[in-house]
Length: 188
Image (cartoon, rainbow, N blue to C red; front, side, top):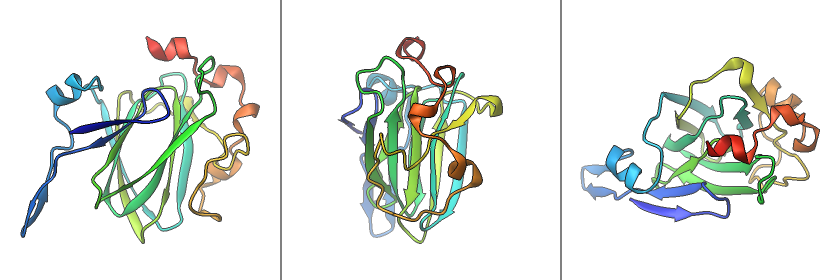
């Protein structure tokens, strides 16, 4: 597995070693000892899978309190995946990183607690997997506007299909301080 650092501390791209032949391919998506040696979490407590059509944008989501780290990957199709640092006190607060994840490139992204996450579907549909370090807590579920002009994510789609929750989400600057994580809280 190759670990690729990004412009956001803690957000990493993972490229597994893929073994293929005429029958298809195989790779280890998670191996406890290798993840631990790479400094990544090994105690995932919940796995979610979603299927979305072309043009769907999910995000920018986060959970506070009870922040979740997420190991995300695409099981079918292709997405543009985004992480945004929303930790109060962070040197990279409000900055984003994005990368294409697909069934063809086999890339995965780890997004640590304290970051918002979202993705836009580029293929006809995509099946997306999220392995989470904390359980989902409805009362802690939060959203930031996908098109926040201060964050200015360069989404590869201009008129996405959104849920009501994502359509109503407010920009980062309008989020109350108590709804956002801090660097200190996410470091522990």
